[in-house]
Image (cartoon, rainbow, N blue to C red):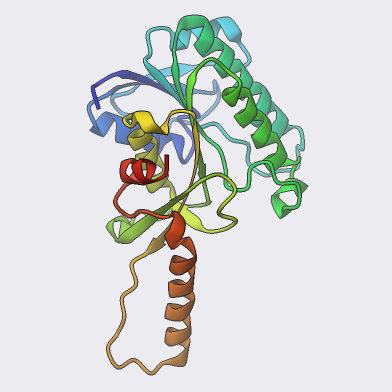
Length: 253
């Protein structure tokens, strides 16, 4: 992908700073958008830091001016303030969309969540968070922008053995559970930006580790774990590709 000036909102978050890191590693210039009071995590060295409130339209437009793309990695965390999802995952996403349209940032990628839009889910106890995420998705879908929505499963912090993980891609509303390390989510985001076929698409992603079998194993617990893992991989096989997002998109237009 040609080097560009990429804006990343939510850059102090656990997924956002990894997106910044991956973009810098690929040679992009990065404008990292952070809340005024947020701590600067390790990994943002080399990025231009811009502190702002996403509800401040003029300041947001100024921060996005000149960028070629925006990754929206903001997201509400479950908590006691049940209005947070609406403010973060709907209103703030809408503000970013309008700012992009105002200053000509045409390429936008939104990090959403598996099961976005579903009503019957435990996470909705926290301010209907999955329902609200779908509102943000719809605002992006209805915009004039070239958008991509990535819906990751449960997000993991581990950075070990990532090369052993197989990423599973699917169309929207095909995967209901599963997890994926945040680092792989960040890598998929950068790959999606570099892949024109990802535009106007909602893509679900989870991952599973490679299965290492022990010859002659007779441990019934180990055998059951391996069997469960094989069944999960088999269930995903019709919607998965371990060859990368671009290959999966080519096979699933």
